[in-house]
Length: 448
Image 1 (cartoon, rainbow, N blue to C red):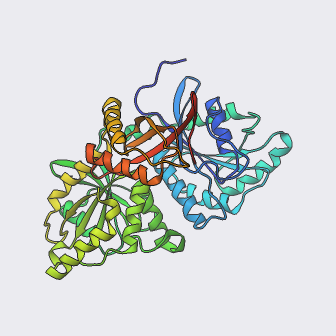
Image 2: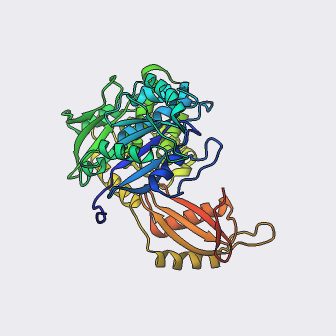
Image 3: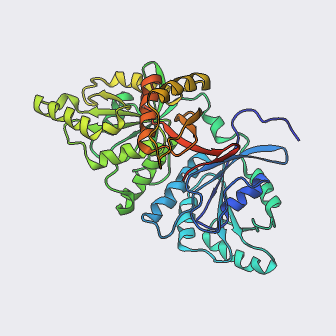
C-alpha cells in the first residue's frame, strides 16, 4: 500500500433515483458501513463525502440524495444534481435498479449525463445472479454505454467496478486544476438587472472567455476579470425568471445552469436593481446562494438612477426584505457609469475572508461558556439543557456543532449564531449551527 496521497483527491459522485442502492454501493466502495442505508427512499438528502482507498489509490466518494420521481420539480432536481456532479466530479457513477428496468427518472438523468465531458459509468445494481444479466442488458437504452452489473448488497462485481472507476479517473483531479487559480464568482440575479453590463464594465468590453458550456446562448460563460489588483473568474449567468419547476425550454436550462454556477462558485454577487422593488425573485436567488453555502455580496445596480423618494423607499425595503441577511456584504454601484464598481473587489475579499474564518476551539468555548452563563438556554419539558462543548467543524462556510444535554430551541440557535457573528465577524457568509444531544455518559444522538 502506498503512503498518504498529497493534494486534492479525485472525486467520484454516486447519483441516481431513490432506493436503487446508492448508499449500499458507497459502503462497498468504502469497505465499511458508513453511509446510512434504509429500505425506504430518500434517506440520503444531501451530498455526503467519504474518503475511500482501493488498490493503494485514495479518492473521495460523494453519496447524493435520490431523485424523487414524484417530488415537485423532479426534472429540476435531477438536472441540478447531475449538472453539479458534471461540474465537480472526476467520475460519475449512475446507479439504476436493473430489476425494475429504466424508469422515466433514469431516462431524465441519462439525458443530462449524456452531455457530460466527465466519464460516466452506468451501474446496473441488484443483479444477484446470471438471470439478472438480461435485465441489465436492457439498460443499453439509456445511451450511456455498457451497463456494469453488480449486486451492492452481496458484493457481486464490486471489486471489478472499483477497478473500472480507477481506470476512468484523470491523472490530475479536477480540484487540482483550479488550485491557486482565480477565485470563482457567480454573478446572479433576475433578468434585466444589468449583469451583462457589469461584466462588460469589469472586463472593459474585452471579455476573456475561458470556458463555455456547449449548448444554447443561455449557458454560463466564464470570464477572467482584473479587479482590485487581482484576477477573478466571473460567471455571467442568464436571468432567473421564475421557479425552475414552472420554467420551460431555454429558460428551464438557464435556471438550472444558474444554480450549477452558484454551486461551482466560492462567492456569489446577487445583483439587484436599485430603482425597482425588491421582488420575490430576488429573494429566491439570495436563498439559493445561502442554501448552497456560498459567500454572498449584494450589489445594488443603477444606484445613479435613484431620486430622493426612491432612495428613502429602498432603505425601508432593505430593512424589511433583507433582514435575514444583515450579515451580507452590500455595495452600491452603476454598471453603466462605473460608479462604485471598483469597490466590489473589497467586498468580495471581505465575504471570502468571513467564509474561510476559523475560530480556535479554546477561544470559542471560552466565549460560549461566558455567553451561556449570562443567557442560559430555555428549559424544555421542565428541564434546562446544558451546553457542554462547542467546536467549529468546518469552514467555507463556517459550521459549528454544539454538544448539549438536551435539545436547543431554534430561537436559541439563532441567538448563538447572532452572538458568534457579533464576536467573530463572519461578514458575508452564512454560518450553520447544529446541535448534538448527549443524553448520558458515552451516548450521543443527533436530533432530526
